[in-house]
Amino acid sequence: MKENGDVMVPVILSGGSGARLWPLSRAAFPKQFLPLIGDKSLLTLTLQRVEGLNGLQPPLVVCNDEHRFLVAEQLRVAGVDDATIVLEPSGRNTAPAVAVAALALAEQDPATVMLVLPADHLIPDHRALHETLRAAHEAAASGNLVTLGVVPSRAETGYGYIKRGAPAGDALAGADTWFRVERFVEKPDLASAERYLGSGDYFWNSGIFLFKAQRILEELDEHAPDILHSAREALRLARRDLSFTRLDSAAFVGCRGESIDYAVMEKTGHAVVVPLRTGWSDLGSWSALQQSCPPDPEGNVLLGDVLAEDTRNCYVRSEGRLVATLGLFDHVVVETADAVLVAHRDRVQDVKRIVERLKAAGRDETDFHRRVFRPWGWYEGIARAERFQVKHIQVNPGARLSLQMHHHRAEHWVVVRGTARVTCGDETRLLGEDQSTYIPLGTAHRLENPGVIPLELIEVQTGSYLGEDDIVRFDDQYGRNQQA
Image (cartoon, rainbow, N blue to C red):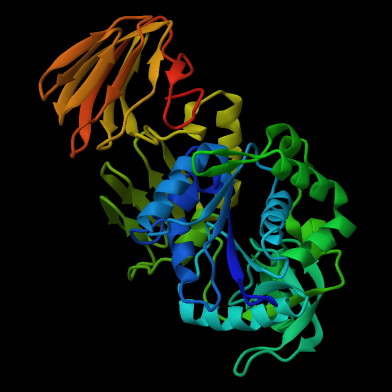
């Protein structure tokens, strides 16, 4: 193990819900897992942008318990097989997550430098980022609490700002000097944002931090001892679950929710800011996503099956069906299988209000897409009415669902591709394409894919209650206790 702060561990915070990017981002499948820019998810891009840094160790990812299999699968696809995945039973903002990560890393080496990265940001210029991180690493290894401040390119009202103070030390050759943080500033109005841009003394708050594990623990102990205590208890009582570290629910849920900015960075006398001179976006709204994509000659960003006539300065995205626009200016249109959003670009920050109304009405569209991913594959709703629903199910090669039963529904399965191994009561048999079976209400059953190609089937459910919580699970290789 290297010493004196040479070791750097990416701590990736993947607990956000991305509500402002509804209907594409949902609580069960938020924006960090989506390919919003290109064909790779934002989490994958976050992992890739730090590759090649000196002293870089395997990442530690803090995520919501419900997203554990999404994180594990995306790490696997990215070729990262040695990451530590810590599960939060409930979101408590970034300070508790950072505290847990710091406690875990300090047990191995208190001098470890933590590179705290949100999982859902965009930084296309990896070389510029690496140059900035080398300077920031030097500042953090010297005992400072470092934040990266993005040099602003416009008067932006959707970001928080950092005002720099006096120079704090010389960085590496060719890089910027570190500056003391004079203050953090909330999202400003337009006049203030223009003033900040003109002064040259303000940076966008990137939410990227570097500090030694022991140093941030000392600062938490001074400025937020209750958060540190809860995090310590949650980690002390944590248990291993497959390849995950599951924090103790009671200890963590009782923790005060707070951002690391509020809990420590705005209170400490040891905060420094290193300028980041490259493109950056938190992709926090549809307008931010539009600004991150190259426009056509009419100023439009058109993705998917889109036909735009007399349309300017719009972001139009189709995930499936044809979307046609006529005489539309300065709008966002996003189509998914079960919802369509149409909003003026000036109102995209208010998309959360739509999500809140849907939640209040008990609508599933806040949490799930029509296609719902599970550790064994996915299912997609095709049709639903009173007392029946139809699903398209795919089971990955070698995967299997839990051994389970339902109190209120029976199921009919028709195999359309691959081979299914079906357990129904005391009988187990193989089904090929065009074969079917019936699972009576109250009968223990299991579905498996013993083949090397995906298993696809059509499921018809009939019964008095068709909710996903009507599952009694007897055995499950994924350690779940509800929802298949």
